[in-house]
Length: 355
Image (cartoon, rainbow, N blue to C red; front, side, top):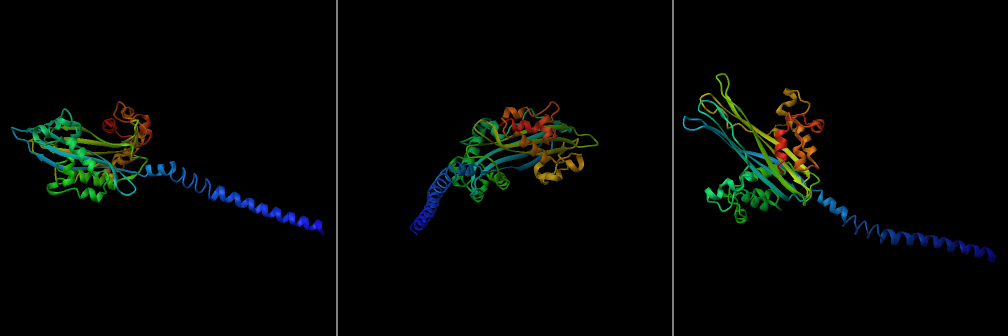
């Protein structure tokens, strides 16, 4: 009887010890230890590297072009006729709260000419306003305190940290900036900046960009001249390819977006402009499938799709490496064509290699 009782007591003690052991293992290690209050909740997973990476990778990236100031003049015996177009390119990064983290702007203001007898005039060079730097001459000849590129920089600094509605509210009388913009050093008209930023903001998508990356925008303009004949108007065509990118500390592209605005300023043999300035000018990307490369050109992919393939090929590359994307015939090297971009890439490369 005593032997049986002893055995029973031993069994009870063993069972209690077993349950006690299970409880101790669960509470300290799982509930109070590394899993909940340690690495997972208060350590690396929540407050450490994982969350930091999530925050850094939530930035959106968007770019767009805004076309303005379309104008033509007829040629006279004393002065060439002209066609003018301004293409403002903007790039923005946007955080999870809808605030702009960074902004980059530039404007390609291009004027081309034609003569009184219907001849197209070739330009020696095209530079953007930012590329012209002090040679834009707002200070020397316009009485401004700061040059255009400095005023653009000032506007970009004001935009940082603002929502789209707050950016739109920066426009005051006569399309100039409000007191905040003027105080920052931007006294020029900003309506075109704001319009470009709005389009870029609305086009923004999630990327791998972080706040440490640098936004850049560039543009390269190419010209094609055709003289007028009795049968056909002449043309002075300008194709402005823009490239927006985020670049890391090593100069490698993290995100990219290309586009192109193409306008043919037409004129007759008497130097009279025949281009319709009231017609809306859309970029090639904005035209989408209406650009007609597939429907009428026999291409397998539309222009915007081929541009996207070029942009994808730029990821992880430096400007020098992108400069090697073009072959002697103007088309992309084998890797670019196999990636899905079979069109002429010379404009893309000229713009992208400037970053």
